[in-house]
Length: 356
Image 1 (cartoon, rainbow, N blue to C red):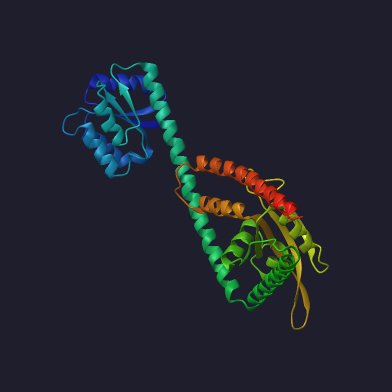
Image 2: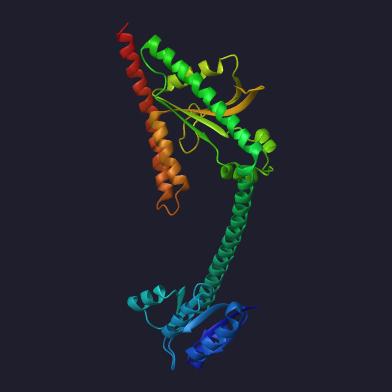
């Protein structure tokens, strides 16, 4: 049976509460605040709840609450104040000190039982959740230490640095092909199919984290076999049809191999994200060999790129208020962006048609 402490100077009230609760709990009794703290000093970890009178000799309930807060018991043991007062200011003061609930005099058997049971169950769930969070935090910290060590090993390993050089070369190959297409469009159609190109190479930490999360070893061979997004190119276009035209021209080149295609423009993610993702196998030409490397190429409109940067901040920034509301606002904005992108595309088409 769980132990609960009843701290009440009235012997009659102590006995009433004892009779009400004795079938479900092991009830311990204290006649004043000093006795209550003496008991908690020895058995705080075993105590499931404290029923505390505010008006007691030697040490009143407020002093007990202050000591419980000082000893960090108040966050682990629910306290239910025994009171005949209904003054709002008194109840507010108690809640500010960490009190969970009130049991008013005269006692009603069912109300006393339910309030004690509810307070204990709530704190049990709270304490279990805090324990799980603490265990998860420790686990994540250990994983982070492992990832850091793996990343450092990769960083100083010559084969890893050679592999990163090869991925960088693949990025340059894709950039060159896109710039050639851009120059051709500029000459032929007097406009550019894209506005800008952004590139990135995953850091050793990011690579190690992804391999660890997927259960793969952190080795050069594992990187080549299991990761397709170490090298990344993001192409920012003005209009949706430029995305598809440019992607078709790029994948249509005879030395490019399309590994995988994910169209989040036609099939947006639930949060509203829209982009065209291609995994390409691209040839690079080394001093002694021709070698194919994987590159992830993402195509977005200007507006969707701005949207994605804002969504990224929300995803990785801690302690953001009203997260659910912001997520919904972003989803609505993504829908509006799509509508605006196609409206602007239609305006451009009308201008082009008017020129003949």
